[in-house]
Structure formats: structure tokens, C-alpha cells
Length: 174
Image 1 (cartoon, helix red, strand yellow):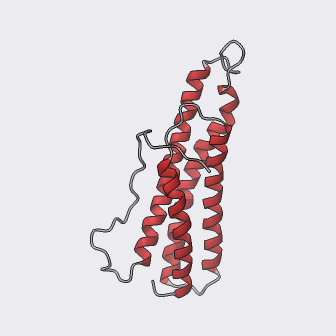
Image 2 (image 1 turned 90 degrees about the vertical axis):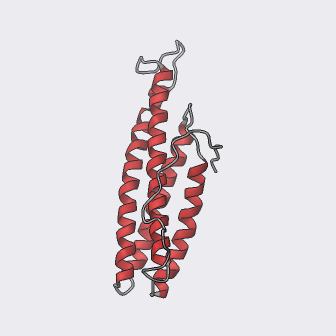
Image 3 (image 1 turned 30 degrees about the vertical axis):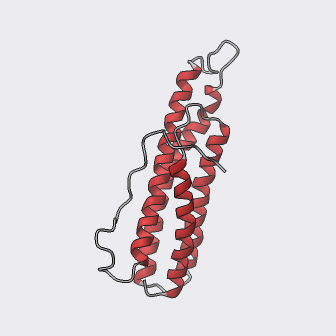
């Protein structure tokens, strides 16, 4: 990365992306998702979309270089992962009222509230996976672009690492 403006933007982006990625790693699959869970994840999608948009805007305002083209490509791929996460969250949030039990223990749709909540928990898990992949892909690409030369780091990953599938991590939500 030779352009100082692009390098500075990548540094800023990397700091924000890594902080969110670590928070996502700490989450576990919640067996009883609630409105706060969905809203927090929707905020994460919105924040990263906003971050990608802001950086894309700044990059397109600079003279076009190979560096800026590479970063814009990464931002575009990240937006695709965010779209997948948003789709899962949209499904979950749209159906959350049906998971709330009525007085007789059934959901508003007449199904078992426990079964409906389990299905919604799976949607949250899928959204978390997509968010983790988006952040990981962006983080890996930023590290690759920030390295000093094409022969920079032997064995460095050039792709995202799969999200953890085990729900054993301690949950933390800001």
C-alpha cells in the first residue's frame, strides 16, 4: 500500500472492524432470543454498512489507484455478506411476535412458542455467522493490503476464517 490516504483509511477501518469482530466472537447462540438481540445485530449490520459507505465515499474522492480499487472491491464483498446477515435478521425480527407465548403457551400463530423461538435462534446464529464472515474477510483483506510488499507475510491467510459454531463462548452485548 503506497498511497498514504488509503493507508490511513485502512488503518481506521481495521481498528473498527477488528473491535466488532472480537465482540461477535464472544457471542454465543442465545436459546431465547429477544427484541434486544435482534436490534443489537441489526445495529451491527447497519454500522458496518455505514462504515463501508463512508470509506467508499472517501476512497472515490481520491485519485484512482490500484490500492483504492482493491479496497473498494473488498468493501463490495463485505456488503454482500452484510446483505445475507440482514436477510436472516429481517426474517427473525419479522417473526419475533409469533414466538412470544400467549396465555395458553402457544404462539400467536398457534405453533409451539418453544419451537418457534428455536427457529428464530437459528436465524440469529446464521446472521452472526454472516456478520463474522464479513468482518473476518474485511480484516484479512485489510491486513493483506497494509503489508509492505507482495511477498510480505508467508502463510498469511487470504480468506476469512469460518465463524465459531459452538455456542460455548461467553455472551457480551454492549
